[in-house]
Image (cartoon, rainbow, N blue to C red):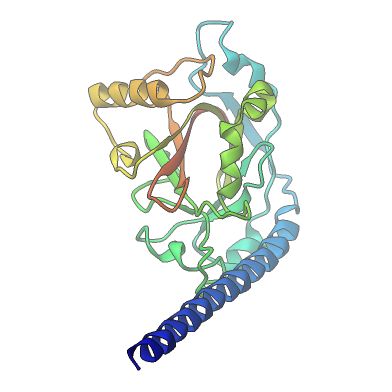
Length: 266
């Protein structure tokens, strides 16, 4: 009798477990498909180009002419028409593109760092979340460390394809070392200076420093990098930080880049 009871209980728990897993897989797939549909619509609208006058400048140019930053002096900016995108979501602050990855998304920002973990660009609930800026940052003026978050999805959507940056083949192609960020008031080009994985922490998520702590921060992020990028950093630099989950154990994948070129719309 006890064996029969145990057998039935085990069968019930097994069925319940597999049903639970199946439901979660179906929900994940549903959210994924909906998120991709939204991405495709936004991609079409993003390709509408603007034609306003602009003023371009090299930002904090290195003194050393051998510094790799000079390789990107003539890199063209991406162009984005934000008018229709703003009508879809007034939280939009820019568009982010990481060279030779699938990262090519509008960036949103609200008054907290939780909402867009579970909501899509159209404000519907979605486990894929969206790409969003840290609420403490001012992306118009730019802080010392400007942070953008996104889920590291296994299907390589959102920030999932940033794992490519850890591959040696990706690093060897120096044209890949570029991040483009276009906002409502300017276009900008950032040179990647550090890539690493690390257990969950808050140090690299600091947005404001005094000069001494910022110098220490710059030294730390370069020391942590799994790749040695042939460029220098100093306290006049502006840093862009991309943060995502590397795995289900809390480890983070972090990418840092420095601002090297900016184009302000007149």
